[in-house]
Amino acid sequence: MAKFKILTVFGTRPEAIKLAPLVKLLAEQVEFDSRICVTGQHRDMLDQVLSLFDLQPDFDLDVMQAEQDLTDLTARILPKVRCVLTEFRPDLVLVQGDTTTAFATSLACYYQQIPVGHIEAGLRTYQPYSPFPEETNRRLTSVLARWHFAPTPQAKQHLLAENYPEQHIVVTGNTVIDALHWIQKNPPKNTALFSLEPHKKMLLVTMHRRENWGKGIEQLCHSLMALAQQGWQIIFPVHPNPQVREPVYQLLQHQANIRLTDPLPYVDFVQLMQQAFLILTDSGGIQEEATALGKPVLLLRDQTERTEAENSGIVQRVKVEHSAIVNAVDALAKNPIKYQQMAQASTLYGDGKACERIVQFIKQIVKND
Ligand SMILES: CC(=O)N[C@H]1[C@@H](OP(=O)(O)OP(=O)(O)OC[C@H]2O[C@@H](n3ccc(=O)[nH]c3=O)[C@H](O)[C@@H]2O)O[C@H](CO)[C@@H](O)[C@@H]1O
Image (cartoon, rainbow, N blue to C red):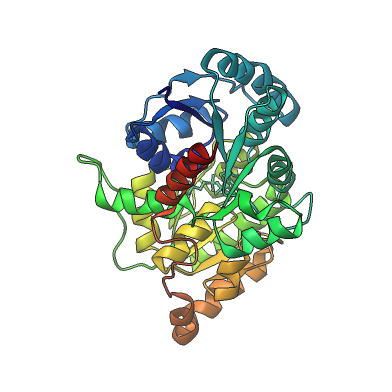
């Protein structure tokens, strides 16, 4: 019998982290012919993850260009994905999350009438520009997908409220927790892990969302200067986008107690999350990982689609303003009871078995076909 052909397409670091354990598991299934296609939307950061998980793409579209804009990126992905679809002729294409790669790939599949399975389906803020373009990318991807792998019951509820058929939706947990477990079980040998000053409490910081470009990044940098002067040790892996990198390096490069780095290998970053007193971020995936690790997060965004973490108390939204950020850090440092209430590990985003559930569901689809 011919094998069921699955093509998994991704292009950015967070998609690669979240799909790595899944493509590894798919490759072990004898009844599947599973291939990987990378668009290369984030070239360097993507390659770092591929090498960590020892993944070799079967197709590499290499769409990355300097200062790429969303229109050009979408327009470059469509015909390149079409070529792969017509060459490999998959029975199912898997995409993840809310990137331009996920949306444009789903559209290319729709034009070829190839079914799409959407991993991490159903996250919503219902604000089209927050986060931008991710909120609209994920809603458009839902429209184009046939199968919806929802990470949480709440994500499933969003999809049901939008009238997607219940038999096409399955709650799996988020595959990022599988990735986290994998990395904890398979720490790479010979890595030079990041060294810290042991007597100082550490704040781990990331910021890259478009909504924070300009004023938000400036406000964050000024708050970090004030916190560094109070004696906090700050580690800030800086996103390579010039809209982020230039102002951050300009404002913070020579400040005592602040270490700016290039984006770190995933294993180093996970270790730093564990060592941090607090994480300050506008990231999506870090909220999920921090929830699993029991590490409090100050979320530097107006909206979040990860309301489960916020409701559980581990994630606290903070206005991206100098004094609001400084006050929020101070308040937690001075209130150990509140801090301990936040620092509770939870399986809200999964138990590390999301990939198994996705694979089982796909086998069921094949059986029912
Ligand atoms: C709107 C939103 O919230 N963002 C989306 C975005 O990712 P998201 O905001 O999560 O993307 P980030 O660039 O913050 O990447 C986060 C991931 O990178 C790791 N990390 C971070 C810094 C570093 O130096 N090294 C490192 O390995 C983190 O541990 C985490 O796993 O695309 C994801 C994949 O489709 C979606 O799930 C998210 O919903």
